[in-house]
Length: 373
Ligand SMILES: *Cc1c(COP(=O)(O)O)cnc(C)c1O
Image (cartoon, rainbow, N blue to C red; front, side, top):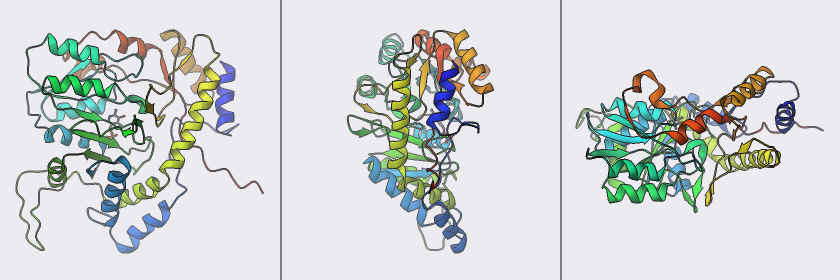
């Protein structure tokens, strides 16, 4: 195990300092844009950076509309509202995900149903989805598959099954900005998709999220509902319904614009790191490196290995964290959290196996090389 932490330290050119799991790198125009917000006093709910960040993201992901919001969680909650999920409804998602997915469903007053994972993509298993739908007579209001760690789930099959049962798909693409499947950006397959810009994600706005959709009507509605449903007027305050203040402030969007300008180089660096990991682990017995699925160009948000069993996972976590190389297991399965212990769930054999064995490795972009002259 010793050589793994040595390898990671060499990869990050950090022989001494501790290595974080995923720290942001700011070496573009972040400071310039932030200073501009302060100089113009436009730090808050309106400003040119919000519009620019939305346009940049819309064009980059090739979607019809992108609406910036305060974080990924409220983006998911709003996405569920946009596809008409109501209190008391059932919403399908997966047991192996970050808690935000399940929280967003709960915030609506709906109940999550937790399905098993696909062993190759770590995302929702289309077989588990079909199995649940064929054997259930309850109406399902929406399905929220998650692109885990930046890898595409089997989203085509999931969308096809959901279309058959007339269920809208909300894609949790919080971890997947920059990832594509057969050239199409993740987050643009379902009726609505959601990205996150939390500090540990591929790029960050401090905190923030983005709602993506190819349905212009839904996009306009997303903007309206996340900005207090104000009817446009030069001075009147007239609001058309009870709505939300889920805006992304201009100061956060400023950071986002500067980060977007560097996205390609961040993705390239993360890809180089991923390939170095893949080559390093290829000959190692009892350790599987999780590579991008077929057809997917992953952003490799967090590189992941599978160890033999839970004991080996725990001793690896103990060893690497003690030596200053930050590693983490995947999230506790949702039905194992107290607030979801009574939630409906399918057979979770794959999710349990992955959760027992997976470890995330340091995966952030590297700091720009110091000038060595
Ligand atoms: C990060 C994340 C979110 C939520 O994003 P926040 O911006 O932190 O609210 C949702 N789902 C998944 C799978 C995530 O990883």
